[in-house]
Length: 114
Image (cartoon, rainbow, N blue to C red; front, top):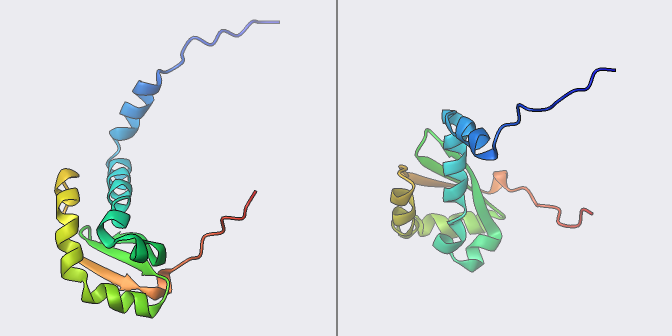
């Protein structure tokens, strides 16, 4: 029986470097990082009832809201939210021109899975 030698292992740094060459993966990672700042920008109360859903046309963030009331309240604060987002957007070298709030996009997460 022939012995198999595994000698062509790639270093994890090389794998990550290869992944980061893909523009779509870089874009997804950058967006995911931006989404993490939603809690700081919106505040605890709104972060519990809304969450970033997607980006449209490259610079419009869609926010899923638990209820239409939350969506309306956030809509009234949109200008303030955009101003609060600005430092995070600039640090990630992104563009954010608008926020859209949509109660139809809300999906309840199941935290009871084992």
